[in-house]
Length: 316
Image 1 (cartoon, helix red, strand yellow):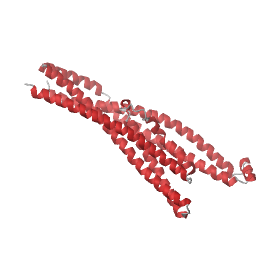
Image 2 (image 1 turned 45 degrees about the vertical axis):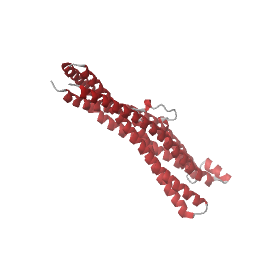
Image 3 (image 1 turned 180 degrees about the horizontal axis):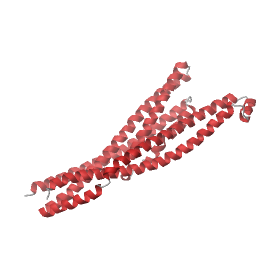
Image 4 (image 1 turned 60 degrees about the vertical axis):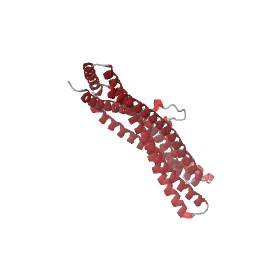
């Protein structure tokens, strides 16, 4: 018969594997739901792109719509507007396609990681039976209480690990949002200069910063998706009514609607600044709640460890 320490060492390994499997399954379910959402978005944006490109083609060629616009004298204005709308539709469709590809890669990686963890539950039951036999052989109330404490401490460690991963993902969102805010602030400054007669340099600089903001938006979107999946295991414990994790998935759609539909308009930049600021505020609220939960778990861990030490010190 093995010693209790040997059994506990393997138990900790199996518990870690089981906790990992549970988390992976939860994350996979969350990603499958996200994939369904983004598939709908991809289909909708593909249809919108087709319509916008058709409108541009009609105005560029000798169609009835182009002839009517020419007679009214606003063909070039209509064509410019339709091209901007087509650009906005293309950017939204491209984003939806990138989101789908990213989600699919994550699902495939999860499936690969889940394969060797399929037998964890059965092994845990075997080890618990072995541990019960060792404790029965030892006898005494102290042995039974120590077993209970080990189980509770293992649960606390698992919860703190989940909270730590969620906190890290949240900080990644804040970091990406900061980079996006910096690009938007620079674009806003250049836009003001442009409107005051800054010339081609101000216009080029503004568009460069808008391009940087567009790439930063991809980073924010990816970081939010990671944060959302990390919250899958702890979201049920977050009771703040201001936190709606589902809102995060639509951030990029809002951003592209607001910024690229007419990216030469200064107030669109301000709308985008407000949008990323709002996301930052929501994420900070969730992070504060996660920190409080982690502190609670730490206090519980200290109390359990103290009781365990007392039992060990008193045992003869």
